[in-house]
Picture 1 (cartoon, rainbow, N blue to C red):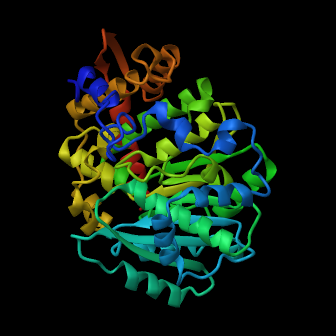
Picture 2: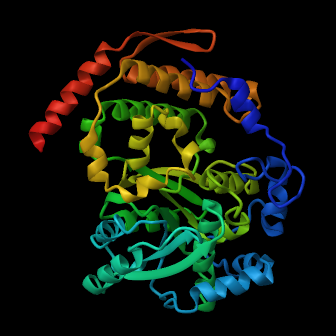
Picture 3: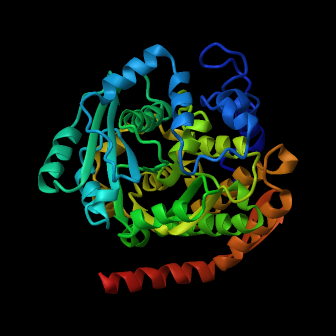
Length: 440
């Protein structure tokens, strides 16, 4: 069963409607930039010199980026940071977190950052935000409570309301505020800006050290994507989610081997140099979704997709709240398409993840078949034969190996995925549940 036929997917991908700001063909229906406009988004300094070195001193490129913004935007940015503490001279890593109705989760998230090593070397910058028609929740008081209990952790709490909910705009204000504070502090050196979410479940205590070391040891490195997983109890309660996420992880792992330069950045756990963020033109404020993937593509475009500028750093891992994946499972929506409802699923923010996990759901063979077909259709639509960046060979090999990693016997009829045997997978899911139940 197809979740969505390719004609619909292709129409979405190639939508050439007028831009959201009235400029023809500048943005697609999700507010994402058309590839043809990438050159105008990135800064001339990077466009003219793809080998631009911003690994040490990036003050000039940061100034060029900030000066490029409109006077009205700069005024808003100054207003946003006017009460913020100055960027400390010892800060090498800024962890940027957008917080939309995160009062339920934010304190627990910040407690995980409190266990990180080298607290003098990092700060956490939170942009509490909501649209003008949504009331403010308890996020501010929870942040204040944390700051009182953990005074050694550098926390910058920003607050802004928006007329529309566009994650691109939120991340732009958030990240630009770090550049603004960096410039105001007279810092010329490059710092690392990590992108995380406000619903963290766990993090490697060496997270800060690993990220800083990766960039210091490799001047050519522009950005990294860290490892992402979910808590074991969520996998036990939702074996379908477990199988689907493991399939996607295996697929992407193999794809990285064949096409290492197609590694996408993700808002949940990625990091980039302050200078390359500026040089790439920053986040696209009109993006409704996939702003994280887009900024990675802009970096790649500016660097002419030369190898080695973006890489995967598994040890810089986090465990993240599985609420969006659980929401997809309960709604019968394939996980690969979980962000389709990014704007509309407001109620998920009000439910503690523990309550979602308690609901649980048995493994559904039919729903898993839908997951596998949706993943096939999604990545097939991004192959060379469909006008996308993935080679058809890398796609076919990666899909097949992911299936074999999970012990799934299958065959294809055209582009339909036909499952022959899932017994090895279902047996392993049962054993996983039993092992983790005993451990608990």
